[in-house]
Amino acid sequence: MRPPSPSIPEREFALSVLKQSLRLDGRTPLEMRMPAFRFGPELGWVECALGKTRVVAHVDAKMVKPLPERPFEGIITIHSELSPMASTEYEAGRLSEEEVLLARLLDKVLRRSDAVDKESLCILAGQRVWHLRLTLHFLADAGNILDCACLAGITALKHFRRPDVEVIGDDVTVHPPSSRAPVPLSINHTPLCLTFAFFIDPETPPILDPAQLEATLSSGSMTLAMNAQRELCVVQKAGGVPLPVDEILRLVEVGVQKVKELDVLVEAALQEDWKGRRIEVR
Amino acid sequence: LRPIDIVFESLDRVDGSASFAFGPTKALASVSGPIQVRLPAEQPSKATFEVLARPLSGISDTDAKSFSTVLRTLLVPCLVLTQNPRTLIQLVVQSLTSTTPNQDPSLAAAFINASSLALLQASAFPMLGVVCAAAVGHIKRHHSEPELNSERFLLDPNAQEIRECDAVGCVAVMFRSRNTSSLR
Image (cartoon, rainbow over all chains, first blue to last red; front, side, top):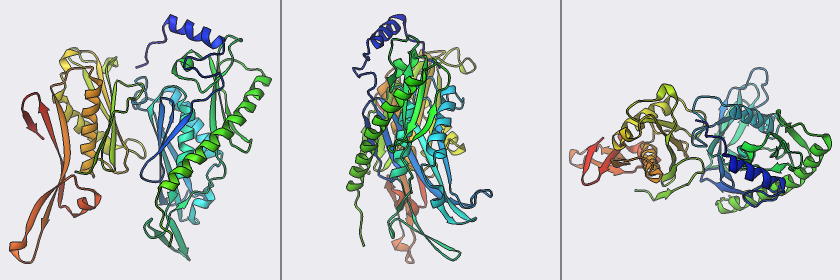
């Protein structure tokens, strides 16, 4: 059930504080919460936390017959279902508006931007390809699950290792992880998402990574997905407050800086986890 | 028993949450309640108790739905639902390992224990008791000499031991205030 809208004192205080470029949790308007990563025992399991917002991403792979119109490409599917665990406002089985926007954005950022090279997932052209299944579980929604989900998703794809496959003629041998080291996926680039929230009052600056209350009070939001090579992957602005062009360009510049920092963080977390896993070299 | 790991997760938007792990088999449960209920599900004299079980990969399928009903029938006797009529108590259980509860009884046991812990952490509605569960496996070894036939029970079998067992199951016991009762 949708929780009641914020009370009048909450709303007035929050909006007046945002007008002075302050935020309720002490951040500056363009400051993002520090992401924290936790990796599971198996490869491809990542939990990403942005403050109190937590998302778990899991990747698994199996071999299937490819689609007839694309015999040389692997298949990637993304499952992102919001459950009442994330918040009591989401109901199981009923597709809310946020869920639709979330699914569309994840599809654009993780699948259509070609972050993972699909042709490298091909084993035997026309007969066997890898089907990667990325499942996202939303444990807690304290604002900005979009960014958290994209971060968890791309980190899980980078963390995952698929079994090594040997093809001799038409004979396909899958080597289990115990005999041959599993192989990482070939990731072309790392798209990372940033969400900005806007308010009706023109004097209130746009804020990055809105928290729960800020997102409820905002009257528009824009999501940018970029990679560290200064390439813009996705821009999503669905309705809300109209924005002038120079404002958008300014935020893109801000976004570029943030994405570079985030990229460094993600790489550092992955390296640290990889060091902790015992790898046998034969 | 494999080493048990219990964490009270304190998820932000729900009333109580806990994760329980038997070694690598881990489950996370969250409880919200009593909260507003949808009109079709409203009951005039007691609270509606809803359970949702979700697997790690893919979307909830019939396996998950069948386990949700089993979990619901198991936990209903330990809740006093008549104290909060026309409300909803919602339990969501998330599997954090790749097995399914119908194939892996230790995951079923982890689900049950995580749910009990989450219900206790929420402490928002009265409960009669706590349900705890563990998986048990039965191995019967046949030998050419009849004297060496052995059968024994294994507590909390792991994946390899489950393959050796001829029967596995999950045993759940409800502990009430003074003495144990109801073995399922």
